[in-house]
Length: 430
View 1 (cartoon, rainbow, N blue to C red):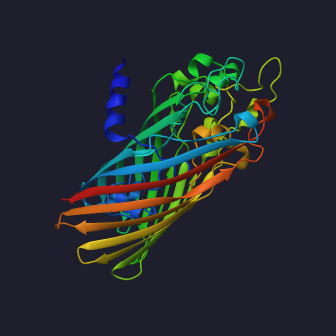
View 2: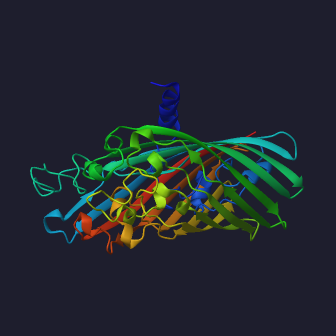
View 3: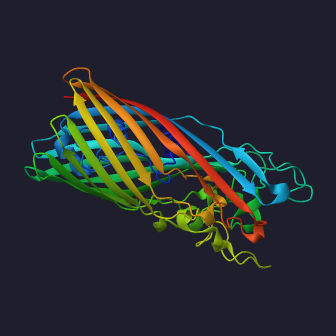
């Protein structure tokens, strides 16, 4: 096994066994404190997760170390209707995942800070048991099959780890800029997609090839300004991360296995309404449309003639999930009472999956939109703090409309999802 793969497995096992599916497939927020406030953190300076939120915040964060972990529990269900013997409904297994996070910051002087954030950017996971479709229904002699007429379990597993070293500089007493080079590592596995072998550019690199890894790079830049004693504003932009191809799945994803991490940007404000109460609001946009394997619709396959489809799976303009760009709105509040700080938040994101694109999203049903979060921090000493948070993503269903193309028999696919997570972190100030 190559050295890079050995390191990849160690890093992913130890740092990012993530399986998000909240704002599309990005995390609800980064840092246990931020998650307790609906993920609103672009104008926050109270932890070391600036590499994921706003690099400029490092200049105000002080010397600190933060370690945390989430227990993440998504519940996913998919159904096919209007197909007679092909009608089926199935729920995904594998409902619990650990999502660790790490942040460190060191003030070199009053104006310059160096830091490091390591976090699970996001991901998606489905693990549907097979056997819903009876034998011979998916074709003469076909065994009992999964809901997409493949053999065995059906699903995908995508995990993304980002390492973000950071430098931030105060160019004025209350204003800073920062930059975080982003080093990305992702894992992917697909199972049960054998039914698409005849319309893949490389059927041997389509499904059931175990986990493949890919490295890539990008950059996040940010600005933070304390424009009054009570109001702080922030803005951050992360470029699209150019990732290596998943060679073992070159016959699945467009552009021969390419799966870049999309560009995203956000702005935020934090207002200290009273000495005890802080209110925060963020807006974020995730540009899924810039990644063909995510944004290309299933319609790119058609027309299918005796010469094959217009664009096979894995080809330069092959089909993807058909996702739209996502707008995310985050609101949060924090109230300090002695050694305790109590938090609450709400997040809404626009729907990434159109009703016409639910078919392939059976294995990536990131349809939740409304999230409620609660959190708290207990100052255990002058230098230590213990934080908690709970997030519930409310159940949402996207009902297909013209979602299964006639070439696949017609009918509809409906997707349902809800999620819960609980996180804990400890922070040291020094």
